[in-house]
Image 1: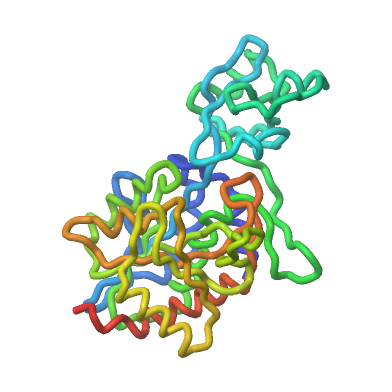
Image 2: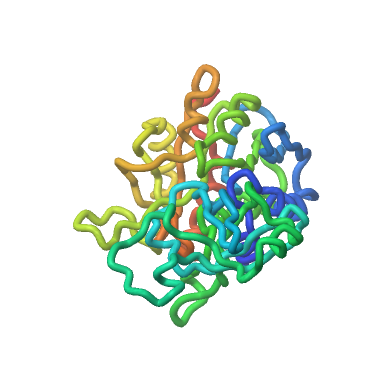
Length: 340
């Protein structure tokens, strides 16, 4: 099962540059859905036809990363952060620059102090960091590196510990969601109700893809499949890696649909699927923009708990992914009764 997930995680797809991820997904699902379209913003919409109610399941393809902002005479480059990143996770990272000519060039994020082996007395902001490829200005130009070029993290995807269950790598947020939707599409040969599987763009920079796709599709209800931060090292432990999918009741911008949440929670408990209720004061997901589309759409979020979320490398558990697929499969076959 992990071969496809690892492929999705290892490929580069920073917000606004999701085409390579889209191509992988399309190849996997094209023989399992009734139609696949791509809208003007770049969202990919796969539909399995059926009667009402119409369900929308969304997972975002994009990941956090960087963009070249300025190229200096010595060949080093300043950058702009794409998505939410702490400066702490950037220093010393190996990255890949994706040129307009299709080349991938390795580089390192550093500072003048680190580069010269001087003492670092204060954690620098990203504005004081730079990217070093070891190439000259002319070599960078010949390679096709210019202002606006995307930069992604270079990480190998591995298993932690002694079992093939704990996964570590980049872009877990939200290639996990994309993987879950792909597996659902393959498992559910036929659906009694219409299901719109939407692989959205630009979630990390403003939830933009889900906003336009939800407006276009106008489903009867919707669920965002995403990740959430594990807080198992906090005083209040409510989300733990390996303890099942998380059902979000609230985050900084969303109050999810109560009837939909209750239906999913009951379904999980009746079928002995571990599930973690989530109330958060931070962040948001595609569910927020979907919930306020047109006249409003009953919406919630099912998330996978992740350690080191929004960093260059994160940790999650395969069992949580499997349980999420199982729960969603049951939900699609047993939709909420309140939806007409």
